[in-house]
Length: 150
Image 1 (tube, rainbow, N blue to C red):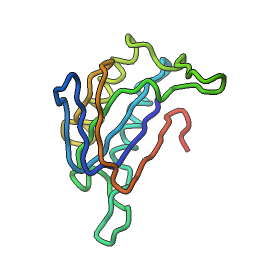
Image 2 (image 1 turned 180 degrees about the vertical axis):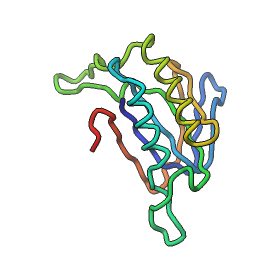
Image 3 (image 1 turned 120 degrees about the vertical axis):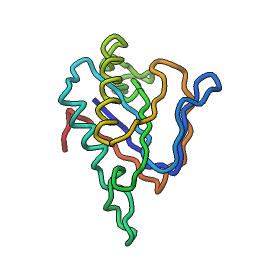
Image 4 (image 1 turned 135 degrees about the vertical axis):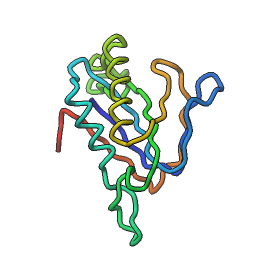
């Protein structure tokens, strides 16, 4: 499982001109799943996201988590996070989970993050042509891969 986390001062997800999710301060999380991902990957990644200390404290030091600042989270599925670009100019998405595997993983991940955050998280629509807007705060952008726990 791979996620790209962006600290944002605002973000929104639209499909067909309809706003599915919007928020002010928090995290926009782009999430990509592999067929090999298990519940352990989902829990580990969710815990990292919710506890990641990337919000400023009163001294201006990144020392607080999204939960501690009562921030929001929007999770958007994005299979392109598993793009392989080693050969040629057209990315291969062979490692990305197919929808019949990825959709249940995505839905379970949303539930786990919501439980750990203590409130409902926003989402996009799996497989839809989404328009995601954001104002990256900082900018702070962090990549996490559950298969490379560094």
